[in-house]
Image (cartoon, rainbow, N blue to C red; front, side):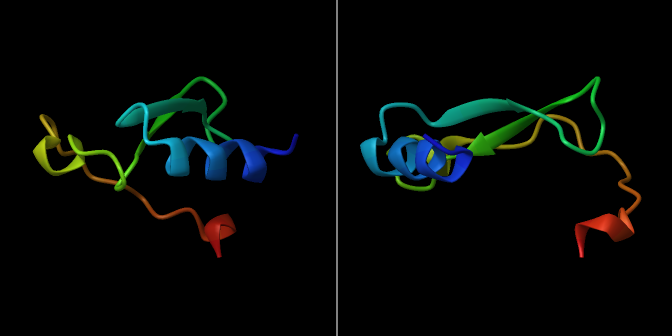
Amino acid sequence: MTSLDTGEKWIHQAATALLLVPSVIVPEETDVLINPAHPDAADIHAQKVRRWTYDQRMG
């Protein structure tokens, strides 16, 4: 199963609102994905906002 397959399954099952995945850009970090199909997604709000430097490798 590929990462894309896993992500699509997670979205469609909507069992959890959040999914933690390892960051590809910053190996020491974790990215948090929000599932918009989950009923609790609308209740999720950022607690801390910090400046982000856009990485040109993102396209």
